[in-house]
Amino acid sequence: MIYVQSTIEVRPEEAEAFRAVMAEVVACQEAQGWRLAAAFAQFTGVLHTFVDLWECEDAGHYQSALAGLRAHPEFNRISAVLARAIIRETVVLGAPVSYLPAA
Image (tube, rainbow, N blue to C red; front, side, top):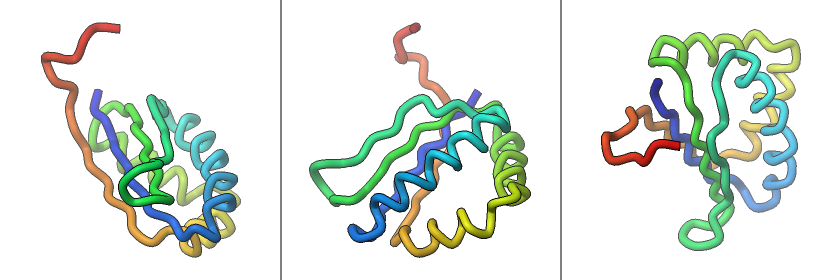
């Protein structure tokens, strides 16, 4: 298992549209086998920044799930909302560390 951290800075006037369409993105990605482990909006630092922490099998699963999103019947509408909303997105792939407490 790996983690995918997505840090997304959005335009303030598009924040609500972003939140709404992300519900659809989450449903699509979870149908592809990803699990949204955590998601939050920052209230310090760079405002209007959202951080999503996903769990997926490996880097290949990351690529195949993104392909699944692109194949979604509503992808053109979803991607248009995201394109209007997102200023910057940083995606980081990482592995669990040995000092992470067991759940």
